[in-house]
Image (cartoon, rainbow, N blue to C red):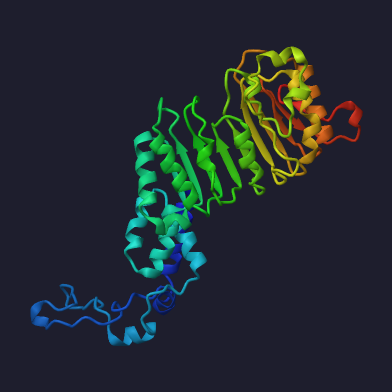
Length: 363
């Protein structure tokens, strides 16, 4: 509401200025400056008079007024960046942009970009409609910057829907934010094949598999990554960066691992710009979390890590503090860590590192 009131106040201030100044910034479209033919007073005319006979200002636009406004034009004299800011105030809800689309070509080009900039849908039926609509209008593909599709409430989406999703992802080459939520049993990583966009934010419920790791290897500009995919076998979905599970766990744990499963391991040059990492895991142990320490040193901009567990296993206060301290030793940019039990740890600069620089909100 504050943004609306500020915007409304600016419009009121502008409306109080001299008409010539207002017209110089908001020229009418072609034809709007032309004066309308005046009717004879006997037919009612274009002017109104009060009961005392004093006439009000005529409603028609006279030729003299049109001359003051300058030559007619269909393009606003405000910079297009300013027009975009104004239309941003109208884009929520998006139906308010529909009249702007019909104004003229100049405003249409700006409004259409605002209309399709963010595509977010969580209702299954509407998701299908949205995907089909975008595929049927190739001219809007270049405007889509954010795509958020959530069909996790469907038990078994059809293969045809996933093929439509793959086509859409291949055509929306300007995507920067992508969020894909599918049923827990589904992990169609193949729909990402052939995509040429460059993401900054990526969130998915797909399993942390070898194929997903290869996709992330080709996205060097990601700054925020969220992996929500997990399975009953924790070792199959461990979303650890560069972590070689076979070399980090004692042989006694390896008997439950599927020998045909290819682990989630990223290349050493992947995700160099990663700043925020969130993960949902089936239940990482303290040993697994500590084993990730050597692999955090490659992230020079990582500030936030959230690791949420779905198991009921508990970790002690001392164990979590040790994890936070060990992780910070390998990744000095870390500022906030949320570990599986929900404790929030934050880094507090200290002149005496031996006293401990990590504190919990429970303290």
